[in-house]
Length: 132
Image (cartoon, rainbow, N blue to C red):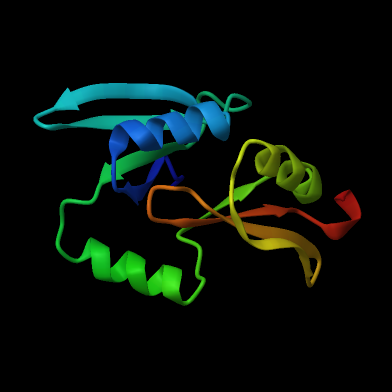
């Protein structure tokens, strides 16, 4: 068993697509119209055949209270691995990304949390503080 697709709920698929590709640097894997929305997935350019991130529209009524509660409590909806959290923090901050938690050591990891502009908090983390 392996993870092939996981998703984040987004307020606006086109805005999310722009943020996840133009700002974060992911690549589009699929963008298939489905009614008023689309099946949009993005992948890491370093693993184009790896796991896909689905930019899922927020149509279900349970999504808003769920996401609002996560954001209010500062809980990230997803976590992405990076080689160097501090370098990624600098790169993304320069691109206008708002961080709710700056680079912070947590046990043997370095983490940071940002607002994806689409209704979610996203954590970036490196495998170990020694990699920083």
